Length: 157
Image (cartoon, rainbow, N blue to C red):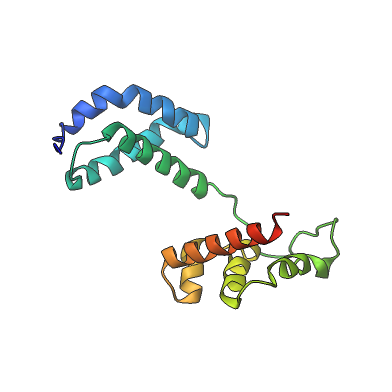
């Protein structure tokens, strides 16, 4: 197997810069953010470029970095929740909002129930769940994912 040599980073930009900008425009959280998004993505790519082991699939690698940067930008724009009285849900009585969820996850093991509660009721990200449970973020992500798959299997009738 032949290992592809890494071209100069500027060559990659010359080759793929226009299409990466178009991709950033499609993914940017706001219409004017594409250039900033692409610049951030290219900085990330430039920092990681010396650590690459081979030059295979560099175009796809750049697309992945632009996409990940866009996802991070969207997450950063999540609206802040004001502390105070929670909004009243007119469709459900005040005390019954979590009962349906608790009934849904009742068949799962305790660890799965806790992970799902933290993720979907308390709306914590995987890093915060990991911190609460004293596990790694990867383990928290896996625990939530496995619990969701189990629920899907149980309720797929």
